[in-house]
Amino acid sequence: MKYVDYERPTSLKSALDILSEKGDVTKIMAGGTDILVKLRVRSEQPDLLMDSKEIPELNELSFNHDTGLTIGAAVPLYKLYADADVKKYYPALVDSTTIIGGIPIQGRATVGGNLCNSAPSADSIPTLIVLGATASIQSSGKLREVPVSEFCTGPGSNVLKSNEMLVTINVPAPADNSAAHYMRFIPRNEMDIAVVGVGSYVKLNASGDKFESVNVSLASVAPTPLNVTEISKFLSGKDVNDENIEKAGQLAKEASKPISDMRGTAEYRQHLCSVLTKRSINKSIERIKGA
Ligand SMILES: Cc1cc2nc3c(=O)[nH]c(=O)nc-3n(C[C@H](O)[C@H](O)[C@H](O)COP(=O)(O)OP(=O)(O)OC[C@H]3O[C@@H](n4cnc5c(N)ncnc54)[C@H](O)[C@@H]3O)c2cc1C
Image 1 (cartoon, helix red, strand yellow):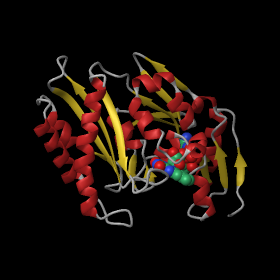
Image 2 (cartoon, helix red, strand yellow):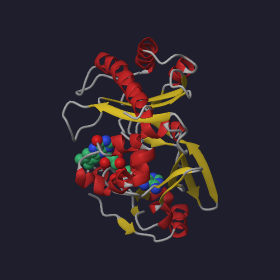
Image 3 (tube, protein in one colour):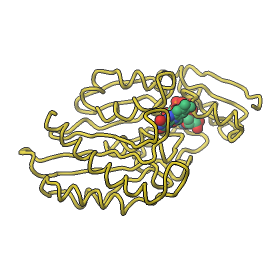
Image 4 (spheres, helix red, strand yellow):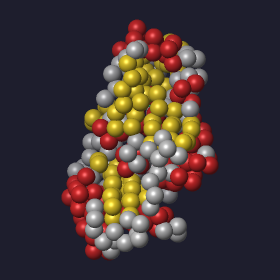
């Protein structure tokens, strides 16, 4: 491992000053569960590691019935999934964060780091996409909001510039008659990355027999997490029945662009897209109906 300088700013302003001066040779660290591994194998070789855990804005975790959920980029997973509002209003975030690594990883790792690491297999990103989350990104003097669905640009790459950092992830308030769900398939029961992951969000009409909107996002089947817009177009206004949900599974399969690797062939992954999409949509419906 190369020697690196270490900074631990205690204000957002100090952090942004560091990035405007040395952003091109700096890597930001939240929990460190991705970046420290990359330093060790030298796939990243910054001169400076900037620890973000002491920056107050990045530690915010708050819920408001009108504005929704704010997740600071340095909030560890264990705090997020133990939060009473997250459990009640955003169970899909609990689905996706309680399966990242094991307990020791969840004590350090963050959703912010999961998003900024931008792995196609990242478990929290499909959930953020289907919930319509946005990323608040700041540089000295400039704040911009980017939908999470547009954040990742390739495996390990995203829209962040070297002088910018993710400050918060903002998830809209839950709508009536809506729920979301995340599930993945892995070869072992734990401590592996998704062969396929599926996040779904369903909003039904007041009587619960028609889809108003459905969002589906897939992990591990393309260079970036996929937002399957064809499913929302197809299901909006349609009856809630097995035939329509079957078709949604088929659309997920057709939208996927998987590769074959040691975890599974492309054909196997496409089959899983169909199966898991149907299951996840049904789980979201069950949640709406209070099961
Ligand atoms: C044993 C093990 C098991 C794992 N299992 C899973 C799993 O099941 N599912 C899964 O999705 N992942 C898994 N991971 C990967 C990793 O734990 C997650 O991606 C985690 O959420 C990363 O969060 P972090 O806070 O540790 O990120 P860090 O390692 O601190 O950072 C990750 C990346 O984000 C950048 N970054 C961090 N914060 C900011 C910011 N505020 N602004 C801009 N850039 C920033 C860093 O520079 C780095 O490039 C696993 C890792 C290990 C070691």
